[in-house]
Length: 437
Ligand SMILES: *[C@@H]1O[C@H](CO)[C@@H](O)[C@H](O)[C@H]1NC(C)=O
Ligand SMILES: *[C@@H]1O[C@H](CO)[C@@H](O)[C@H](O)[C@H]1NC(C)=O
Ligand SMILES: *[C@@H]1O[C@H](CO)[C@@H](O)[C@H](O)[C@H]1NC(C)=O
Ligand SMILES: *[C@@H]1O[C@H](CO)[C@@H](O)[C@H](O)[C@H]1NC(C)=O
Ligand SMILES: *[C@@H]1O[C@H](CO)[C@@H](O)[C@H](O)[C@H]1NC(C)=O
Image (cartoon, rainbow, N blue to C red; front, side):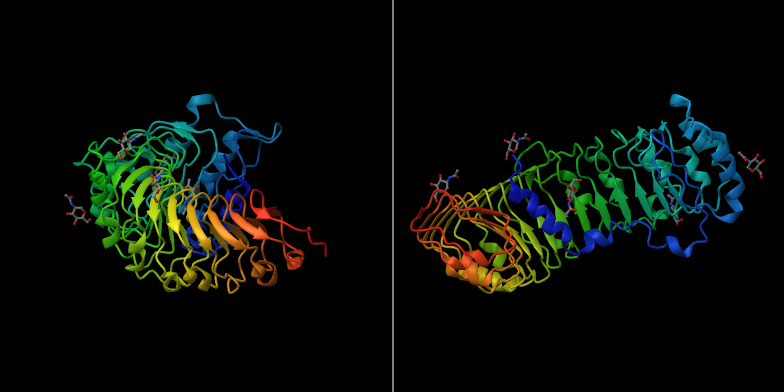
């Protein structure tokens, strides 16, 4: 069930400026090109993302393409069913040797091969994302376009990978930096070859069918085949079990790792030194997290360990991760006191420790003046209602102390929290009057 605080969490994360966002800006080089934009805007067949750039030399072909398919009267592109994709991409595109950017994403194109690619010898950005396009030769074909820097094949129904080592010369393929393969039905078999693409920095394989080893305590065998220079890796929403091995740890260049919603188990892996975003949410990790003190992860801004089986006391070393803005430890089995060093995180914007067994008094969070979300529900915390909440946390939007053992009266300072949207103090031992401003 999505709780209000869960969605607030993602809001905070989205607001952060990090590599994830830098990498989402697809076409930083676009303004440099003498672009002629041929926009085909019509509903519902083609949405307004069709052709971005065709250089002057290729313009005539581009025009053919438009006039062939675009019916000005009906304001629609006529695409004769399944036949559409092949003619566009093979015959018409064959001579577009100057084409650098081709965005056909989010349409209804259909096709079985990517043979045309070998003609597009200048192509740097290609998106076919969101088309029902099941080309199993995708990997072989993209390796024929050494200029390709960014490839989006997300949501294309890709299931198989037909390796053809004789044809694929991966070493030629040294420009590709970003590869979007999310929302397909891929499994791990192509990793060995993908791992040779040493230029690759961004790999999104979320929402696929990636699995781990069959023996549960062995790392997924393809983990060692991940491209060596990755900085951003998204493997969320797969079926991977096994332990996260040293492979990730040894690659200190990682800035973003998202392993959420898998079946990983074992202890908390050592966190890579340069990490900024590290998500292990919704797995089967267990044991203590005290090893986090051994990592020097000063750059980390967002850690999500929620929905696992971590247990034991939290270490008191959080001052070493002073950039932390979002810390999610909810839905685990942590116990003991909330360590005072958490209160030294002056950049903290969201803290979730909901549904654990924390006990004792809360340390002061009065230095965490950027806090917007403080979710402490479902623990065994006690003490008077903390005065610093109303006095210092003036940016609070969500405050939950529900199901704890706080007692005493609510300080009237709480009326200062003008941004408060959710206030849940239920199931405590609070008494006295409700303050009025
Ligand atoms: C591509 O170029 C060749 C040689 O210039 C020409 O013969 C051929 O007809 C062109 N193909 C298309 C589809 O325009
Ligand atoms: C692959 O391409 C590289 C660079 O173009 C070349 O040096 C190498 O010999 C090729 N390997 C094979 C097996 O063709
Ligand atoms: C990873 O992918 C999932 C699903 O596509 C997305 O919701 C999530 O935000 C991504 N993670 C990061 C760190 O960008
Ligand atoms: C998850 O991993 C455990 C071992 O840690 C294994 O017993 C279980 O079958 C796995 N579940 C799935 C759905 O893969
Ligand atoms: C949580 O930890 C306690 C000990 O602190 C243990 O008795 C209990 O079984 C654990 N619960 C789960 C669900 O792991």
